[in-house]
Length: 510
Image 1 (cartoon, one colour):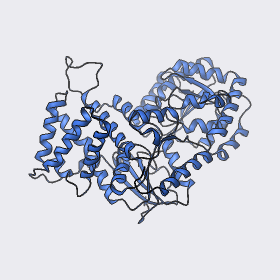
Image 2 (tube, one colour):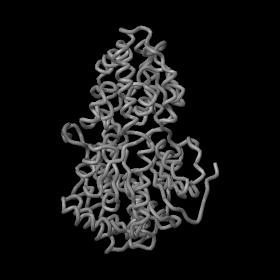
Image 3 (tube, helix red, strand yellow):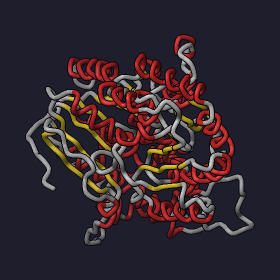
């Protein structure tokens, strides 16, 4: 596919692992935002892991995307410089060591961030802290050895050495991107992490306003991933391990992403969350409260409201999970719940509508679980589907996730008159039961259940599907809620104000 290039743009969207290569969720929102403002020229910087992790783009780029760049950060790990004897800049590495000491010893956040900003400047092309020196200099080797002796509780120096390399090397790729990005007027990152680091570098080096929108809290989601990651080694023997303690390398990665987040929060204004709990989490993680605000997602009523006329009068016995087949969606809990649902309601079906290519091993485990529970005739894997084609045929949308932000699929279901059963994650309780007194007065639009509770999920679904009056009441409450609080017109109006405010702000001013 040929991507557009331009000499300049209005807004640079900094995207990590989302649009246009991953469907649903954040990517759908990015697609909405770009198309909502045809008067603005967007440049996209896509950051991925390895090129082999992504197939062809899932979205056609809107016409007002005038520039597109993509970088695969862990492919860059394979970059090889011809090793040569080099001392490295001793002063730059002393600054780096001092910064890490501040981060590790709990120095005042302002002092630690000042050191972080100084090191970030030195990583830019032309700075004193070069990738070649990081990879091959005596100064880098001495610091790595010193930190291993002083801090590392894992006995493997080899694993420590390579963890440090893999963790830090992408930052020089981001510094190169920051130096060479085309001129833009404002920056908009849709996460902290590597994209947020890039945004903060650009803000620091060019004085550009940085807007940050977090759908989920990046550091929290990375922690969930890191808890489960099998590639992170723990070389302690059975006598050294404390089962209540995380391995040293997991703690290293978590601390790394926490400080990338703080660097981004320090640069961004405004810092946008989807709902109040996440805004408070941002503040707890280092965001200045006065720069935070909430802008909830919104969906197109014109797109989904006509589907209400296609609903049957009684709830179809179809439970539909619309989402990627990945562990964070906890598809297995939904499948296990379907065994209980089918026992009580033999004509019930469970549909899983989402791509299976992101974690093929997990997807295979889900198929195997269906077979082991004898649900082959009741649970269907549909792959990616247009949601409009599904909603008139289903009785409930299901979210069994262990982490969510403000799921568009719940709102889309509401607009079409479909209630939901969801785990108590993200804003889901707010979406189902209401945020304040006025919102709660609209009624309950589904059921909230505990995480990883197949029986609770099944019983909540059976309650709604087995009681037409309760199902209709939940349907009407969902329609009222989405129409009052969660339309795309409301969301687009809020972001228009954000963009106009950023354009009007003097360069770099908070």
